[in-house]
Length: 160
Length: 81
Image (cartoon, rainbow over all chains, first blue to last red; front, side, top):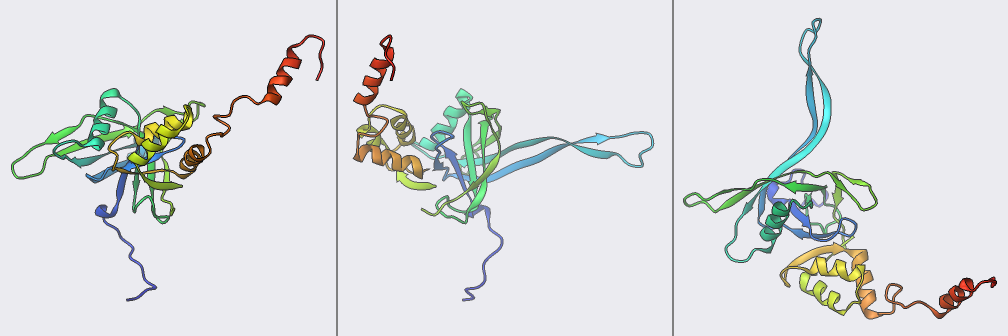
């Protein structure tokens, strides 16, 4: 084995999605084990600029956005994680999501965290396929009690 | 920064703690199936464990005698500290 070599690419299967079940100040992350196909969109909206003398339509950056979705494979019986997601959706509560390229207990894991609102769940039950819910989310307008805004941020794992 | 712990252990910690912000945090973090593993803020967790092992923490300690005396003197007209 070439012990001085390491793999570069990683698969979606190797990533970990979490939600914070405590406070923003002192987070307690719970893994969303039955999640898959996490997709995020982040960056500025581009606004088209056109004027008489321009040879082509050009663009300028607008407000930045953060939104995305993930799929959740439903489980029969009690599912506390899905219940927590449904509760947050129905109450319009802000929920913090975190996504890492490794376990949160690994100091090398890196990713993002963001306070989000969950949108309209879309559930598909079709033939032989497992029942899957698509859960969209978008950055929430979130503030701490001290008045500081909480935005998209880096999240890293830690080795206990 | 994050320690793995079951919700059951967090709920047990909460039960042994005096009322306050630490207990509220433990309660919140421990809500759910007892066997479910979560990753809790290490600093808060150690504060909770300390609060249980030595219940006389700053949060639970009653007002000290020294402070009570000072307050009494201060409230008394014509008395300076």
